[in-house]
Length: 220
Image (cartoon, rainbow, N blue to C red):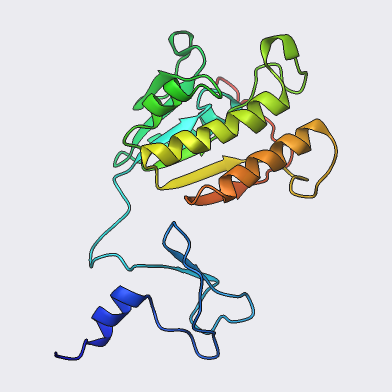
């Protein structure tokens, strides 16, 4: 039997450890190898594995912005639509009553509804999750418009639908102050949502913006 070359051995077993790094690195389901922050001789806290074939790129991509007709989601979808190589989809509770930028398709989705989420996320490479109930920050429990239902349970449903659909990356809009175990309903819901994202096995990013405001220019 001929000895394996270095490249083939790394493809099978993963990359060699960095100098001073333990050999028993943990491989996540997303194919990432997380290196301890104190050991950065290889140029970063995490590296993608296995490596992509030469010339492989991440685009064109199909990107679904859940909540893409809301305040933040609409801005995100419009920025993405400025890149014609991508296919951009925005979800909405009432798509017929919404207008959007050119090149942004609108599909109906309800937070926590697995059927509509699964249809929207089909063939998506990335999901950007920016769903929020319309009366935020005033909760209306009778209509299901609460942080627990929309931010908590709704995000859990979106994560599960994305996982089943084979989505590669999940980007979640959380909020400043989340992740600290605070008792307020908004923070509890965000913590619950973040936990679902982290446990999903998908590549993910969690954003925690502070106050977000809209500025209108003259004539717009």
